[in-house]
Image (cartoon, rainbow, N blue to C red; front, side):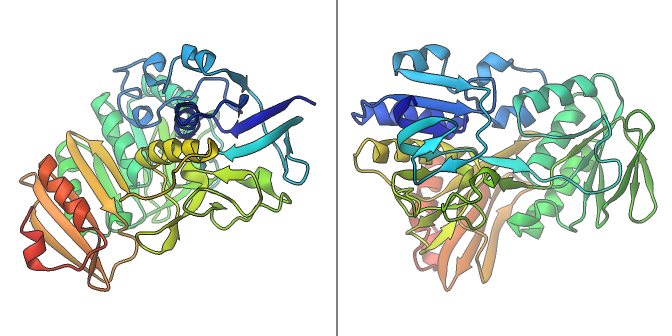
Length: 391
């Protein structure tokens, strides 16, 4: 049985960053990358934006060129579907490992509505998904995007810019409900409607209809929407099903400490799939965004090489649609008070989220680099009107 000092399962940004950081930190072991995808690791943000709109090609989405993996002595075992891990025997897919990094990311949630498997109904996670949606968009005039989170909002904007008549369906009354900001929700409703997007709130898909492919979506209220294309963006779930029976602890992801170690010796996890301990907030979190995958990949690579590394950062993520960039710092999922300053309509706004009188996170747009640095420095600290004056 072939043995590698480090096996990485998962072929995304976290995996690529881990390889580079491992070598840079002095790691000299044999590395194998096992991925169910047949492509080299690529960036996912372009899939709902520039790549979907045809403004860039597949090659430009790559995290690193193939030469990077050759130079770093990585055996690429692409198209490998890992179905189980034997943690006791330290084997995975017929290979033995010294250390194992699981970076399998997440999978899109699917609707259980009738007709969800009709041609023309898509979820978006992979480059192939984005390619299929782009090709379908060229063959139709109307589209429905189900879900008003990050993927839904970005896809709705991109399809509109491709010239389609787009309806955005949100079961929540607020757009970007996870941001818990009525201010940004109402601004986005205005922005999207001005661009011709029909916003439907407080309703859900009852069924997808069509004979050979999708042509109509029936809502719970009884309304019917013509749709040659539907993209379902209702969130993701960590890709952990293959770990059943492995003894690796799971709870909405793989449980790891701040150095990305699981409860099983020599097994680590990072990126979307990891529910990690954040020392700033003193609790476990799981983050499904590019910046987190980028950061955790670099940090876990150091740890795997025996160097100093671990989670010690203020988390950040961003989204962009119709020219509006929104950024989130910290953890806004837990808060007991919030304040809004400025105006999203004017392109200069900050929403502050407080937890037990400390600044837990911010949602903002139009801030200078200096102001953003100051905001990051305030996360986790007692809040006061004076401390906010720096922005």
